[in-house]
Image (cartoon, rainbow, N blue to C red):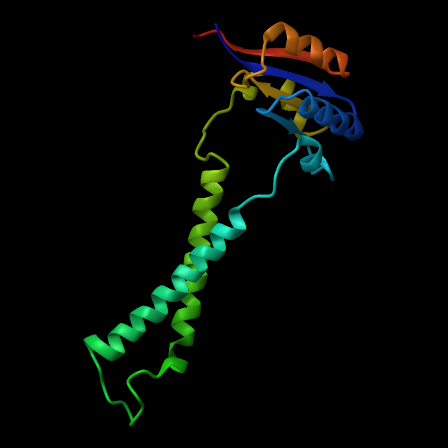
Length: 178
């Protein structure tokens, strides 16, 4: 049987926050907290860093803007110069609309594909969904899951640790088919 990790239920949001802090302080890295609604301060309690997605979106936006401006400049100056109403070939104020639109388009692509990369999507099924108890997380339960890929993970020690910090309904996530 392959072990994927372990889950433990906590009664309140404050219990979940304190458990996340204790798990982080114990040195676990590959764990997650699950709740039916956002919990203020949970990211800090888990020790999560700010995402770099904003930098990726900004870089993609600048790439799109430079691409749009450069493409129009190349077309109007080099590839197909036309004298339209006596305007100069490099009439850059007219480039603003296409430059802006390509900046928005590239930023949107950066946001979508960046979120897919950072969230490890597509992952069609996660091992916590093997648990019947875990289905309560969508309505009124607070769970912590620790993955077996964590360097500090050990079935017995992690189970005892979760009991010590107040975890209830602790369940080992295993696949009977493997």
